Amino acid sequence: MDCVFCKIISGEIKSKFLKETPSSVSFLDAFPLAAGHVLVIPKKHHQKIQDMSLEENADLFSLVHEIISNVDKITGSTLVAIHNGKDAGQEIPHVHVHLVPRSKDDSAGAIHSMFNSDVNLSESEMNELYNKLKI
Figure: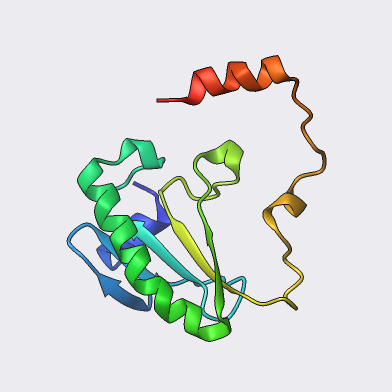
């Protein structure tokens, strides 16, 4: 497989590992958006979160929960970001959670600044979406 994250996990590509669990690893991003940018990934290759088993998911997010306190010490706030699929902005097709230290002066903005327009939905459109999404 030609996945950069799989190569990091196998040791083919060197990385600065922070912590490893049975199913996940965390390491410094080689191309950080901010000092202290960390990635947390499952060891097994999965493109989307919903492709992971519940056990792998629990392990991944337990590691996110554990490492985020250290990331948060850098600036006091941390962006947690996941691009779940290519059309969502995922550049490497392997699940990965970004933990990016943020500050009010970093000019990155809020999530709403990522999108060009507001979506104005009617009440019936909102109800239709609600019915599709509720569990």
